Structures are given as structure tokens and as C-alpha cells.
Image (tube, rainbow, N blue to C red; front, side, top):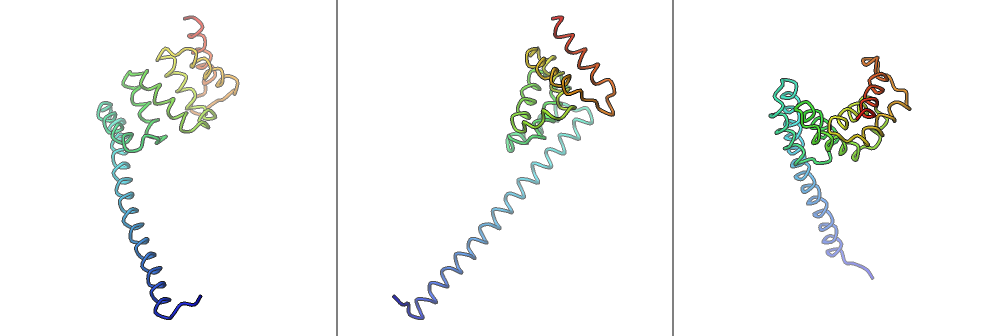
Length: 164
């Protein structure tokens, strides 16, 4: 089967048109995604700024907007957990910390995250979960340069759980 010259030109024109349309659509979609990312980043930065200034309620509100758009954001869930913990809502903080761990299971290798998770679980009265986390901290023999009594703190939390 052979194509005539006009049919070849028509096929080539259609292919070029499809490629151009695809590039235009990709560019438009990328611009929309960039705008959403910039908005989420702005909300996140605002939340962190509010948290550092002590406006925990404002930070929670901004973080809830970020999490509405990006529910699987590890850092947004982590900051939400810390903000809720500072605000005294340890049960909610424990939910956010668990979500961080669900998103990134490798956080079990992060000594700072694990001690914070243990403290939040203790505060939220999730003693069995706290014990598992704190025993992991103890078995790993972690220390942090800026937290020299890390292991003593872990032992103290474990003792606190055992005495309940």
C-alpha cells in the first residue's frame, strides 16, 4: 500500500499538530501545578512563621490548608504534629506523627523523630505504642550532639510508663 504525496503531508501535519497540542496542554498544566505549589509553599512558610512566633492557632489553621491540598506531605504532617503538641493536643499530635511514619517508614531510623514520637505517645496516653518506640530508641543506643542525655531521657520515659 502506498500513500500519495497529499496523504503523507496530511498525516505529517496531523502528527505535528498533535505534538504541538500536547506541548501546549503540558505547559498549561505545569503552570497550574506551579501555582498550586507556590500557594502551598507560601501557606507552609506562613505556618512555620506563625509557629515560631507563638501563634499556634494560626499555624494550625495554615497547616490544615496545606494538608487539605497535600495530605501526604511528610513535612507538613510533621510540623502539624509538633504544633499540636505545643498547643497541648497530644492525641491529635500523635495522629499526625503516625501519619508521618506511614508516609516515610524510614523515620524509625531518625533519633530525634523517635524521641518526639515517644514523648507524644506518652502524653497522649498511648503507652503500648510509646513503649515500643522508646525500646527502639534504647536498643539503638542513639545519642544526639545537642541532646547529650538522650538515653537517660528515654529511660526516664520508660520508667514513667512502667509506673502507671
